[in-house]
Image (cartoon, rainbow, N blue to C red; front, side, top):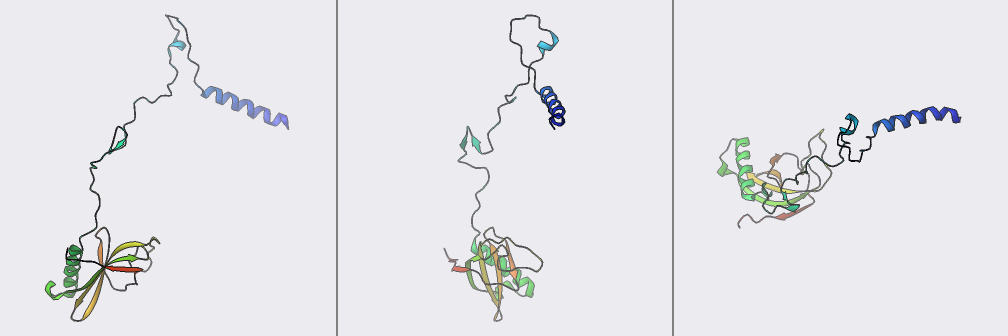
Length: 168
């Protein structure tokens, strides 16, 4: 049994020894031989890595180059929804009335409007519910906090709702 392991151990020893760099020669030889003139590979980086973008000298950049996302303007969401509904119904935008707009906590990433054969992240998602009216018929538009808005034909109820003051 011992003889079976001897040969692989010897082979591995030669392989690993062949992969390690030769030790650097220390001395005062003014005429090094060709093997002595080859320097051992350096383990130090060839250049100093630059800091991550937005960080100078290891400190965070207080003036980021990218804008910080903000909540969408509810008035813009309402106007977008009204324009879309007017186009869907082939009516004037002025005939579309706002019933209410609420800030919503949706149960998942479908924003309360799951579509068949789609899979959604199962995480509570903040957004808006906009209810519009035309000729006593109500229509729901759902939006997320990034301004993505769409008409929802078959809505599911939100987890919670808070009315939005659209008159700042």
